Length: 445
Image (cartoon, rainbow, N blue to C red; front, side):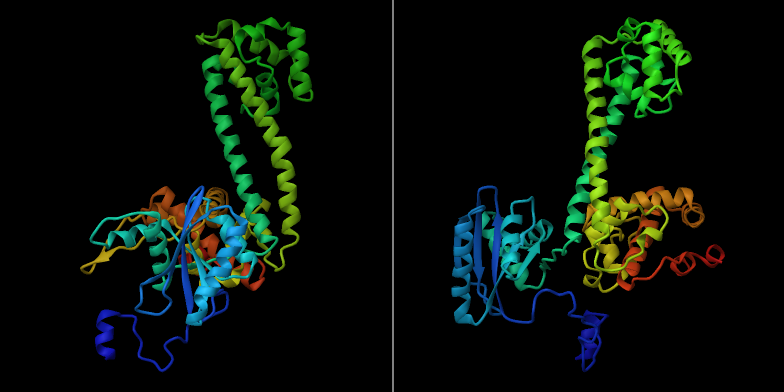
């Protein structure tokens, strides 16, 4: 039997204890008989299907459509499922298709009640439907297949990080949202400035500096509005906005560019007004939203219950650390560093057939896209401004022939492993120890 098993599964090991590598720590579900209750949530109503708990039985033992946001119906459902599971000596487990946001209220309620929950992805559900001869899709069929995925062992345990990690996750995601808005607003301001008065960019390095933003918010980028001010008024405005750095010289330069500019947009007043709105919203988000948000994230980092010392890693500020810890959750949830890389979606897809390995496959991009984004940004800074990162980039970009994105993603995967190891063990950052195993000998020496 072992010889045949090795043919079909090369990883098979004929041992007295085949589960010796299994570590139940961090696995929320106990080893017991469960009654799978599948949910296909929608905006207004949710289809619920309970599947027979015994192996080899796929009968539906209960089915109902309930409101998605009904608290009374949710408590009634819990009591009903407990009564349905009682004749089988089973425990009901509530399995959700984790698409959109409609599954969150019910799942969060069941977690607060201490009930076992699990999730499956839409990709798993689509692949399961693809194995059927007849192509049928309905909410009831989806709920049934969600329950079958749990019964087949293909579901994921619902792991909700404890406080303050849960708050760090939400606040850092909000920070990313507003930061992306600032980038989009800045890009649009640059484009509209070029359309309205391109020569006004010359005295200033960036449009999001305080002095040009003072002109933007008051609608003074437009040549007509700029020339309406006297030289003295414009000089005072620039001197006040720049705290004395700019004055008459810059004012004269701006007035001269307004007189000789080539740009004459057809809707100058509308473009100027739109540019002023963008400038005001940019300043409001930067000053009134992001600053208090960053202070709150710093306070939550002080409450993390375990030592991590991630602040010792170069280019790991409060937002990077908060995002990594919030998206990672408890370090004990992951058994190996490769699991952490896969959780952030930084592992390359693998495809092999007929003894041939496909090359150039993209990343899986599964798991947390927020953590993957922040690790990519941190790795980009490493590859630009640190000695280890620059040497790593040159070796794999020039020596190995990897693309720019692939090289940065490879270093981001190293940072993910390093962050998890330091959080798990509570150790300090040691560059030579951390990167010796990853870099070639001539680089790490």
